[in-house]
Length: 331
Image (cartoon, rainbow, N blue to C red; front, side, top):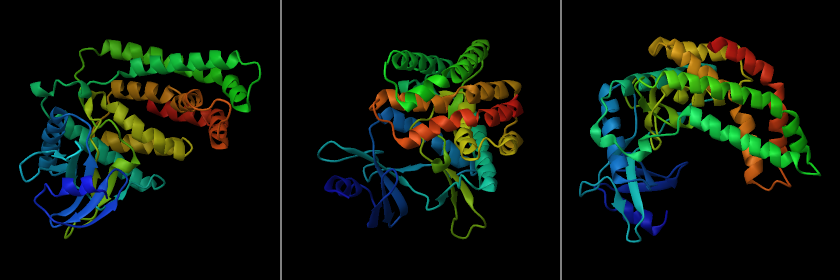
């Protein structure tokens, strides 16, 4: 921890006994419990928005979420002499969701559904009209990524001497681009029909690292915590569910049974509508992993691609049948 971090901590009404580096900041053992000190690059208005929403989630008593601490002067941000800004929040000494543990995955999905349920009940405030809570629609994102795929294909086609990665990418292009086109067209139609459908608050960055299981002193069993709301926005909550589920499904070989169990775990708390399922279908249909490999190639040294990326690209076509079987479960 450097001098500006110590300077930031000194502005809070607490004593730090020890400090260690964590995944996303400095974990501080203090006189008021475990805290996380992070550099902050957003606006004060954005931070006030997060604080207001998360305060209402905490009031439900159903989930543990981020809880920002104010400085001795009552500010949400501490400012160092060099201009660096920090936030401090209560931190949970739990463990991340085990992505290989199917029971824990189902429990995590249930916590995500609870979060979505609470967020839907929070009334939108006029002061929330800030750019960071408006995000690109799924249709726009798919259109942009498909355009990037076409650009990459044209670049690779025009190369006289192609690498193994380029040949593999071109051989599989039609398969995955057809899926991208179908997903994009379907999502455009769905979002076009639902212009009057209200948008709800979404976490915006859900994965296994942001769902924790916490043992609280004197409490039986583990409590669920959903953390890190820097990308919280108004949108389609199915995109939250998709982002968490996709990473799990990739790790489990697109297991049809596990996919169904996750959907059922969510549905028990937040019943999935036909529109929800259709949205999930098009999100999963879009070949995001193929796009990621191509995007990495276009933004890296095109003459050399790591062997692991080549293996990932080869495996995608092999997993396509399993992914299609899972897709049949959603609709």
